Length: 333
Length: 255
Image (cartoon, rainbow over all chains, first blue to last red):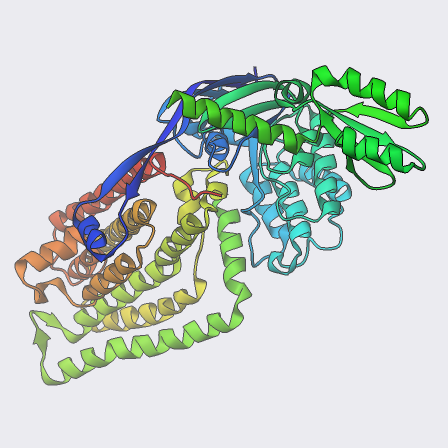
């Protein structure tokens, strides 16, 4: 087992204060705190080499979980083992076996070229020089770092910086990757490059990947298993397909027709309630028990149409999943 | 590892060359401002509270040594940690496979503050040349006291760093520590009883400045050396414990 998590809980004490001068003065002498249960008895296992996506709305407890798994935060209660080690002990062996990449924070030294940060990591992670050179060459080729590792980090674009971040984070060849919003703010091209790189790293090294992201492309591309977290509680644990089947509003029917008559258009939009998309196509998410009826009608009235049935967009699935989780929470409250 | 951390800190500091030169000039002015009052006092009197001019100059030289070490190695780290905590980048520092205290203690150095060091050596050398030669035991005791005092001051600054885990805004504490340290440039016997104790065990500047000077002018005792070692060890142990506690309650800035 690569990652074992049992009843992991994190409770924060958050100071509370009413607005206004009087309450501010009062809080100077007597501060009141409220308990916030950021993660609540979360349990799961991850097998070596698995790619898991933590999904949930803002403030769901994803990042807190990731930070406890990487040893930055001490759990209030519960147990975590990463390859048999307790993260909060911060043992050298543990820290050498993991990495955390945060899209919004950087480890590269702002005023120096990225190559100096790489060199510092070489020394800190105790990587033999020969091995370091080989890995750096490999990462440089994969991430296309050639042209800018000698410029101060402050002069790099966000995309260039993120690619250097990945190189710095993976020089020591960690077996477990924690990725917190790794593609946030990047342009489409760099996002794709980052995803492909993570994919290749996972396949080549067999590393375990735990990812949080609000970008559905990231999730669809990187994660093969989804853990849905809401208010610190795991609401779903399964494959992407299972998630779509369980929370999906139905199947996505897409119809492509070369040229339509007025009557056919009326059928598509008026009767079937489909919405027109690009390149003479119409689509609609249909409840599973209605799919057959709609397909029959389409084949009858539009025999020349090209009809495909697929999964609805992940975003739509997640919106429903989050909504369902919220309803269940409100019912329980 | 220490070498690699120091190298990077040095590289960062060297990025701003004008700072390096400017701090050098400020250092010279600062030394002049420190020595000025001393010259003024000893123009009119032979001794002050039992200290001759050269002996008081020795205390001043030791104070410059301390302020150089504090300015170069201790104070910048407090600033760096506060910045790391505020921006949430301390996470990434703590993920390096090294003792977190070491990482934080070497996260930023300010080599330009080492400009005070030549001034300290010159002043100290001049003062010692005017005084009777110290005994070998005096010299050894003084070295032990200086090292213990520097360790104690490091512990004090680390304690200040620990408070930044809870309060984030600790600028006032920084100024308080720096102002309190300024008292170390005068021999402790100039201060009243309770203040003397404070400057030995609470803000232990006296351990770096007055105790070694006492040992070098032949008025020291083994009790002084023992006090210095006890204060140094005490601060190191307490600050280490406080550091571990601070790390355990680290909440990390949200992303």
